[in-house]
Image (cartoon, rainbow, N blue to C red; front, side):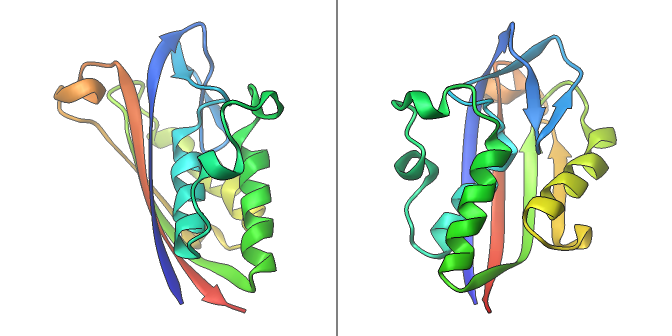
Length: 157
């Protein structure tokens, strides 16, 4: 078994869609980034890559490449899953948290779990997604950005 940890942060900006866990969230602001800036999926990918010491998402999908401009992060997650599978591993589970002051995202979590479990070929109960605020502290609390943390367990096939 291998354990990995991932973290991602993106700035909030007007004129952008807010996408978390592959699901579009109703919001007046979205996350700024080269791709769709899905902090949750990015943290999960980094956890999976880190578990096998394969680097990070910037190594595999550099933000200097036009190939990844505005790309759906779930497409990148599929590619990371393929890498993990080629290494002879499968996902045991993911535990994650999204830190975002607003909007509240709890009602979207079941759809996120459904989407991510299908991409990662696991049961929904193997994907944990929690939401929190920063109690008005720091960049998250000031509604300037969002962060996500994830840990995963990979098991040898």
